[in-house]
Length: 251
Image 1 (cartoon, rainbow, N blue to C red):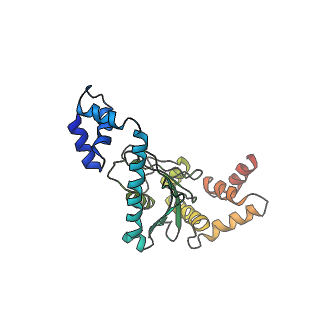
Image 2: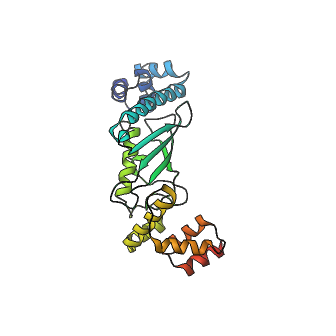
Image 3: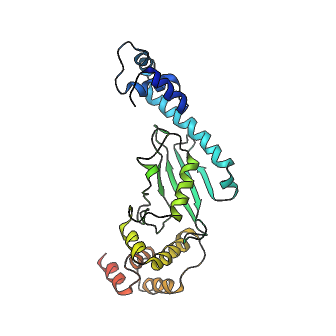
């Protein structure tokens, strides 16, 4: 952020930050020596990182309470819990949206809060395995613009949880995190839905899915292969048992 002390004060009021801290952010572009902005920067220079970390903690405490009191939490659609007492790591949870392959599933999220929050987004990934074009089926990494370059300081923890829930209902296969899933989504929509539903059943507790796919899984597991490896192999090889077996043997 660049500009003079007036802009720094305006930035501080807009983001709920003290003028001194706003001045530090503003001065990053180079304030004139002896100016009000430079004086502000000098005043906080003893511990700007500590100031920013404190802003992050106070902000996330407020947002944590907002989620707990939200209508969506009361309806069991979103949830958040503390992992540690200093509010730097949270455990989120979202319900699979209705009329999607994820309906009936519960998806856990790892949420890490940087010291620069809310000026930078939280780091979020899916803990629960999921079959979705914009979420890695291996690591749970997420491709969502608000968690990257489209983040704004006005966004909140509730915004993030609801945006992720919306992503489950409206995939963006042309901007994928998982190319294999995205290809299946575009080339065979019905197979994608059946596969996503099976993953929702196995990993997220959704109702039972395709008996045909379940039987293929059980047959390969009976040969001694790891269950998770079998599910990944069949899913990525369009449920072709022969090709999935070749993949399992090659690994």
